[in-house]
Length: 636
Ligand code: COA
Ligand code: AMP
Image (cartoon, rainbow, N blue to C red; front, side, top):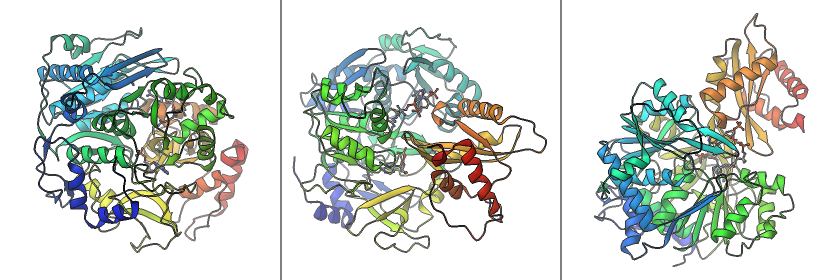
């Protein structure tokens, strides 16, 4: 592995992105190499490697087979919930992928068609993603913790030709019936997919047949393997819906060419791993971490990847991560801080760790939410390897700020900081008026354009939202939605979202979306949902309601009903558990609810009384309510 000096390379990547990324593009097995790195599209947005031709499924599988690595392991499926371990070579995975792609072709799926994948963490989910990529079809994986209503919203937005699902998933010891949820979503959606391919897991869950259903195994038997379809670098590989600041999720588009170049680069220089070493991202294919670091990056770079169907705890216990690392000789692991907190709670002294040989582990990477100091220190002390907090988003698809382990020079970790901007990302802290903040001054975290390859070029079907949400706030910059500061040594500290997005157990959720559901309850006159600090999940949502005049309802009954509504409309992953009844909500004179102050009260943090507040007395009422209900700091 060639090693590089951070400062020199970083400056070069910012000053001369064209040549910097053209050099990196050489690592990819193009069908036709691009002649230019950076261009602008008809909307004036930057695009990478236009004119380059490739196929992402080819890079992930066939390219390694052509290199003589067909019999090496590509995918390790480790499922403590079904007590199964299966290993797939590149040959085996390619055979399954090309066959499913052939089956989809038979069903009429072509380049540019969209396909929704709603599946648990089973190899068939990875096969489905790669089969879409093989055909040049655009997949949209929907996380299994979302309810049918959320799936229906995505069906109507992505308008899939087909949906691929499985009969069931497993959460700890519960069977989650996926297929009935797909049926319900299709009934609710306006758009109707032509077919639903159903992988039957034979876990005993009922499988209601509809005339749209095609059995996955039968299709695989009758299908002819499909070859890779050539796509343009700028053609979309996938859409991944993520929470925004309104109730409607936004479809992040990922292209093929920039994505492949960026992910390859990240494996080498950020994660510091060598091809053939085992990489494990303990996430879910429904999230961006799963897309990038369970599926595409390890496979493109040539690392066996672990697909883990389990939880950090209770499957069967808090030793499961360490068992997987030891059994499969994992060299680099990636998870969310919340997973480490869950383990730490069950095994505070790290006794389970001592039972396994984890000498092969080089680094643990953490992301998805702010990494608190005690979690970082616990992992450092108990695992005895560098623990790397790194910051990124669904939008970027790969890390923005990190301690780059593939570089010659590694920086001393400053707890609370994800370290320095990754090559290609010109990270700046801006004030509201767009001027640059001083070192240590908190402001809005923005990235000067162009963003590097692999980052979102647009939103699916909503260019205006892309422009307004990301590009409008600061001219010439991408606005991340996060607040933070850069210290005198150039370390970036992310302090949290400045919008209505919260991170619950590493899951990105919109409080605005939850508010829409809460507000629909017949007894609720108005409400707000805020994310408050939580020792385990980082943040949890809290709803505060004001009841309609004359509404006669016990607060416990209201809570039960609203929690059920949110589970039904958004899904269990929304994790709304507490619903309070207040006499009124704190607002500005113009009627804006002071959510930030409500959050500060719950978290026991200081806040400035805004001059625009309508009635300061309400803050005392809210504080008393939190004390009585033992919310946030008052519950400790
Ligand atoms: N399918 C169906 N339901 C799901 C689901 C899925 N894929 N994922 C989560 N849920 C459900 C859970 O079962 C739970 O349901 P319940 O309220 O009926 O118990 C609910 O959604 C909330 O889940 P979660 O917030 O994850 O809490 P938990 O107590 O079940 O688990 C952790 C806590 C810490 C173990 C778990 O959140 C975890 O492993 N976090 C790591 C997250 C992660 O890797 N994120 C990716 C970013 S890197
Ligand atoms: P997602 O799009 O689900 O990956 O969530 C992205 C958001 O998670 C970011 O905008 C941050 O608010 C938060 N986040 C992710 N990683 C980190 C990190 N290392 N430190 C602080 N916040 C993080």
